[in-house]
Every structure is written in structure tokens, then in C-alpha cells.
Length: 539
Figure (cartoon, rainbow, N blue to C red):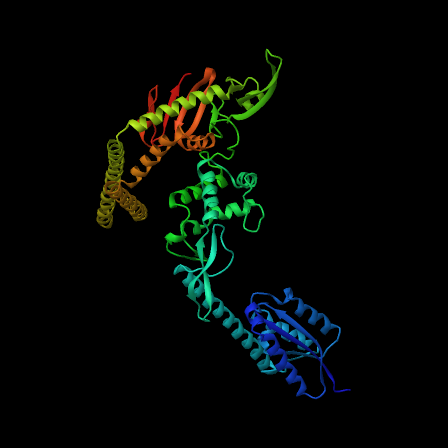
């Protein structure tokens, strides 16, 4: 019994596919035959790792390796046997030292294919490291090949597996993979697609957030395919997923648009992404609260102290002539700075929501009426001409400044001859500084002039921006009178940048659109350089 060696065997496969192929039984059989060929060897225990990557998973996170190391410290076995050494791992920065640790703790490490790993000299250490360095390289190459192939399939518009996006289902269409198996492709689930369209409509046009959409779908009894309610994380993933415009996405790869997979139009999808980004950074033109009954959210300010007004509500009971009791809700835009700092704000402490919203709505309807009456060709032509003139002026100014700076540089360079002859009052050091500065200025002005020329060319050749702006305004004007209150709030938040309220409901309205003739109401207009206009109106 003195020559008996207790053997621990470790069997590992990286993928579930290898488990299904019976790779572990093959390793077990080979190792057992190897033990039988060595007199005195006896298998004490066997460990199985199924679907564990030897490259991605560290040894300290592998339960089997940790248990084997604990038993090694306690002296429970003498030999660690694997089918091949890469079953211990494929990490060149870790696995060689794990193997050496076993050997230093009196454990022989054997491979049924490659023999014993020894550390008798420096050559053994080098060979040990090289073995796992090669194994690590092969894992990286395999990972790159798989990733590249998956991205190629995605770019070709083919589904590569994973969770099925809501709104779609799998369908066999006769596509055969390299293993001669029929695989599934995505197809639109018509019923679920209508829910996706509803989610995007509520998100974009009525300002619903993910949490509110969850409650809304639950109230309607709409659930996921597994029968569970929609969590807000699922809503956010739906909003961000480009599959709904017909584009498959996998890692860095994105397919061309596949018309038969498209559920949402591109404009609606883009608007949803802009809304999500704006809400994350709390832009003023994107209201965070769409549930209240006030038309203005986050874009109404006290004209006296400049602080934002907040919505407050209070209730009271009113007794009718017939004796019935009716509860009344009173909503006001409140200036909390006025209340907290008496005497520092000379405006009103609050303004009635019904009255103030009514004034703002009259302004909006008047503006939209002007939009509907305006000629599209005249509006776009006027806006385009204005943009071209502004770009031309910038270009001319940049060219003039560049020309002047070049003449200045030439004068300095001519002065060099006078310095050499001793005829100049400037010394060499000062002249060199002036020349260096002039050259730097010329380079900077050259870039400015080039940018101005490109802007002029772009403005002269392209009217697409003006057309999009006009189409957006026309859409708002057509929708406003017939849409629900939540949709009106969304339109107002994008059409109006800010409303400043003074005593007696005198308003100053700043619009967030670029067409100047749509920014004129009952009082005089004063246009800013950023093409946003302040309008003053008295109730």
C-alpha cells in the first residue's frame, strides 16, 4: 500500500453544446484508462465542470478548483489528473501559477494526453507558461472568430439567438446552418406589435414615462408573453431597441433596415431617443411630469425674481343650493421664493392655473393659425435666404480678418532685412515673438475661414433643415386642436421655451422655434441672435 497514489480527476467543458456531445464521458473514460495503466494509482474523487469557460472564469470563482485546492492543503490526494492541461484553465496570467501551486504543495499534476508537468528547472517553468500562453491565445482567437461570425450574420439580417424582443416571434423559414439543422428567424407578432406601437405613441406624443407606462398597461390588462406585467426596465429596453425600426443589433454590428421587421417609423424612434436623452439630463423643453392638469411644466418663471414657479393644489368643500357637497380642487402656479423671502420679490405669490393657461393657449392657437395660413414656399424661401445671408456675412468677415493678419505677417517678415542691416528699432527676439504669434493667428483664422466657407456652401445648397422645421410646425398646428391634454403638454413644452409671469398676468413668452414671422403676436417682437424671440402680452 506504500506505492498507492490517491488521484483526483477534473473534467471540464466550456459550453453546453460540449455537454450535449458527451465530451465529459470521453474525458472520464480516457482518464480512467490512464489510471489503470499506472500501478498503485487509485481514483479517490472526480470533479465535473459543465459549461465553465477556462478563459473567462477565474480559478478563484470555480468551485471545483477551490475544493481541490482545499483538499490539497489537507493532504487528501497525491495526483491531480486532467484529460489535457487546458482543462485546468486557459488564462496565461493565472493558470501556470495555479499548476505550480499544486506542485509546490506536494501534488503531482498529470495530463492523460501530455504527461506530467514538472518544475525541476527553469525550462520546466518556461514550458509551463508557454503551454498556457498558447491556450490563452487559442481562446482569444476562438472568441474573435465566433464574435466576427455572429456580427457577419447580424449584418446579413439573420437572427443569431438570445432573448426574443417583445413584438416578435420565431418562425422556421427553411434556413439551414452549417450543422445542417434548420434554424429560426424573427417575424413580427401582429398582436404584440400593436402594443409596441402604443408604447411608442404614449411615450413620444403624450409624454408617458416608463413607470407610468407600466401602470397604464397593467390597468389595461396587457401582459408579456409569460403572463407577467411589464416592468419599467422592459419598457426602457423596448424604447432603445433598434429592432423596432427593422435593424438587428449585435455588439458593434448593425444590419441594414429590414422592412418586414419594422414596427415603428424612423422619425418616431428618433424622437423617443431624443426624449430619453433629454429626460436623463433634464432639458427644459422636456417635461418630466405629464400627470398634472397644468399646461406648463418646468418652463414657467416669476418675471420679478426669475425663480421657477411650481404647481400647487388645494381643496375645499362647496355646499350647493340643494344641499349637496361638492369638492373643489384649486390649482395655482406658486412662487415659493416670494413666500419664503417676504419683501424680496415684488410679484404675486401665485397665479391661477385656469386663467394663466387660458391666456397661453390663446397665444398658441393664434400662432398655429398663422402657421396654417402661411405659404410653405414663402416661409422656407425666406428662412433659407436669411440663413445664407448670415453665413455669407460670417465668411466675408473671416476672409477679411485672415487677409489683414497675413499682411501683418508679411510686414514682420520684411522687417527681418531691416534688423539684419541695423536699420530697425526692433530687436531680433521681439521680432521673432511677433512673427510666431502672427503665424499662429494666421493658422487659426485659416481654420475659421474654411469653416465659414463650408457653412456657406452647406446653406446655399441645402434646404432640408428648413423643410423639416416647417413640417414640424405644421404637424403641431394640425394636431393641437384635436389631441388630448397630455399631447398638448408635449407640444407646448417643445414650442415654448419659457413663460415669465408678472403682476396682473402680464406675460413674456419666449418661443423655441426658428421662424421669426411665427414669433409675432399682439406686441412688438425683438429677435435674438439665436433666432428666439421674446413677446410681451398683457391679459
